Image (cartoon, rainbow, N blue to C red; front, side, top):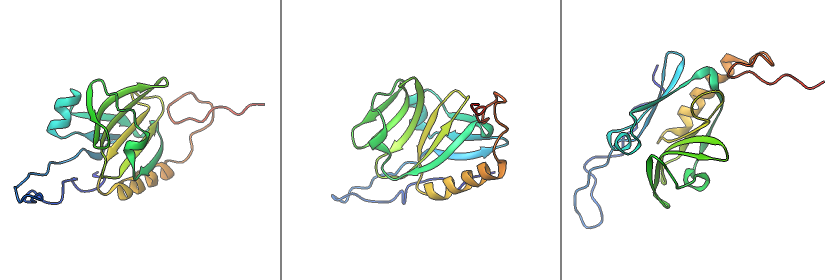
Length: 162
């Protein structure tokens, strides 16, 4: 199942202020493959991060949200990866004991996936149609319903305190 169209820039024939032709590149894409949420990276992002795709089980997904200014909450230190202040952040980082992966461009809204019990604790991916992708993922989370408390599996709520 595809969660939105391929996220390409507006036009590959766009021109900059000097009239020179520039090529807009593709961005990472969030899809659903079986029971997993898959983030497919474009060629440049894959080269920088040493990975082509990230896979997170849908059962591990805890929350989905949209961030209109994704660069504000990210650490710029990416290993492996690359970042430039107020422009982009691509790669992984460990912060406060949590693993985070970002493929973010400053002028694009991002889908933020909070995950529990998987390799990554948080995924932040820029998408031109971030609202639509987040809404589709949120609908899947609602359809899944709450897990039974205290079962110790990904997506399970902790047992209530007595």
